[in-house]
Image 1 (cartoon, rainbow, N blue to C red):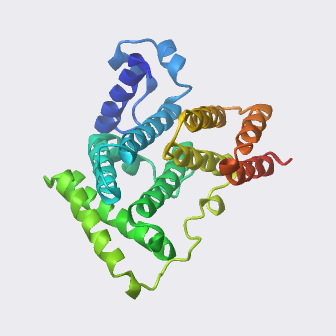
Image 2 (cartoon, rainbow, N blue to C red):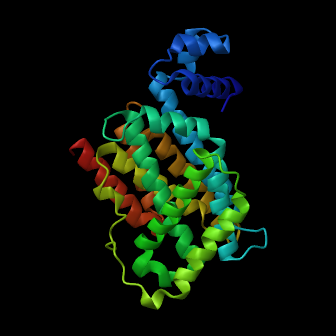
Image 3 (tube, one colour):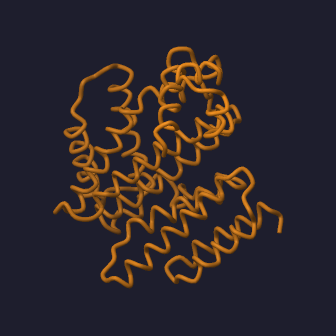
Length: 293
């Protein structure tokens, strides 16, 4: 991302925090940056599209940094989960001004592209949480994975509220360790667990509609690919191809007018990999259903 584009977004967030999103004009953003409106529209189609870019940037940075702990560092599975939770807490604190704007300016019951994107990222984050929990504690948690994920997300949310809104000065490192310790206690005594949430509770394809459902499935597949290991150069090359193709597919879906021929060509290419066949066919089916084919 260019320095200018980053500068525009960061300046806008400061203005939104002071005046509110709806009461800040593009003109005020460009004046604060010392640029013309033309320079703004070179990077963003609208003020709302800039908010969408900010949401995507936060989400991408979070997963990118957290997934760096997937390999190396000499960490065991639970220690990796601690680091991932720590990164999530740190990035949430870092973006506090941005989240303040989101949660005060965009009411969840109102339709907007920003709300749709927030819901989409929320589902993608939940899928990532589920995979991280299975990786840390093994398949034994799958019967109650929806409940365990909800518990983890609830704890994270409540502590973030203390840090962000009540200004509690807590060590996020100690907090991440504490959260994973409590989850570990639950898993150690899981013979007493009777799941409350249904097994398909997190089936987000049934909760999202249209292009949002397609995009969510692509984002989830991309996260899944990025967590895979490569034993040799051939496998590493294949993973690199899968990542680049999936990123290209996601970028096309995020465009204002996605090109059907390119969406279908990229999806069919990915389906040639046995490990991606089921996900790719699901994505293609969702896409064709949305397009009415």
